[in-house]
Every structure is written in C-alpha cells, then in structure tokens.
Length: 199
Image (cartoon, rainbow, N blue to C red; front, side, top):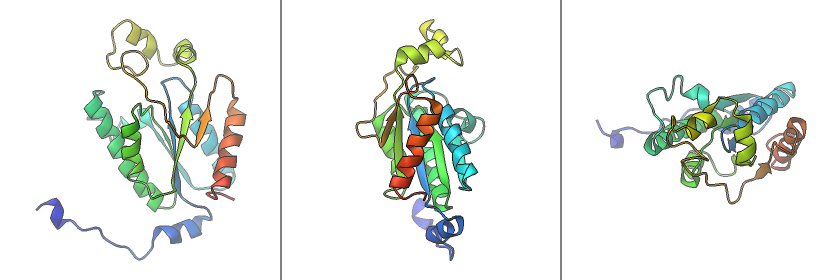
C-alpha cells in the first residue's frame, strides 16, 4: 500500500459544528522564543484564564511531547524539524476538534514555524513571540541548560551554539522581562477577541 491508497475520511460532524458546540472558534496560539523566555508560563496562565471563561483548550508543551509523541527524537536540526512536524499535525487535528490549542516550543527557525502553520487552516494560526532577551533567559536558567551549553555539555543549543530566527511578522510580541504575566494574558485575550476567536 502507498500514500496514494490513503484517502481523507470525511465525517458527518465537522469543525464548524464542533466550534458551535463549544461556543468559540478553534485556533493555535503558537508561543516561540528562547529557552527560559517564559513561553510555558505565559501559555499556562492564558490557558487558566480561558478555562475560567469556559473555553475548551489544550496546552502542548515542548518538554511534555518528548515524553511520548516525540520520545524517539533527538535534538539535531532534522529531529527538531520532525518534532515540530508531528506537533503541527496534532495541533491541526485539535483545531479540527474545535479546541483552542496553546503550543509552547522554542521552534527557532522560521521555516519550522511555517511548516507547523501549513497544518493549520488559514486564519487560525496566531504566532506569539516571547522576545525576552538572551541575557535575561540565561540569568533565569530555570533548567540549568545554559550553564551546560556554555560548558560544552549540550551542543546545538538555541541562543548559544545554534541561532534563533525571530518572527518577522508575529501577531504579538511579549518580553517577560518588562511585561508582567497578568498583562501578557490580558494582551493575549484582547488579541483573541479582536480576531473573533473568543467573545
């Protein structure tokens, strides 16, 4: 059997009907930025705020998917791209399920983020750049990764031995060294309302 033999199965309940059941649009809010920039913290706080409003959400976190979905992948450029391809495919299915998907991944290269975006219906991919400066991320060093990278114990580490390509046209830019968690969430909620994702 080849891929040509596999056809997309159409179902009687579609994405629009699921969105109507949930009372809000589905979308992917994609948080990108350096390790320690605050991606997961902001995504987690936004999910709490959305859940408090009765919105249906799911948070895909970079570390968590490597315990299962991407447990077989390393950290080479090829493996990182495959990691994001899988995440993009899952996020696309979750959008079809009518969910608001929050995704926190370093995703350092623009072409990787474009790959993810290709799985998401037009208008449903919201790119949020957590632009916290490298020196602040390194001072935080929540997981001790920068110290290991500086010592040469970790290769291909974004911001140290590998580049980070900042989004050129992010939907929202947040620097957690100057913007509080509460204000970040308020800006995100305002953006979702402006895009008519939520009311």
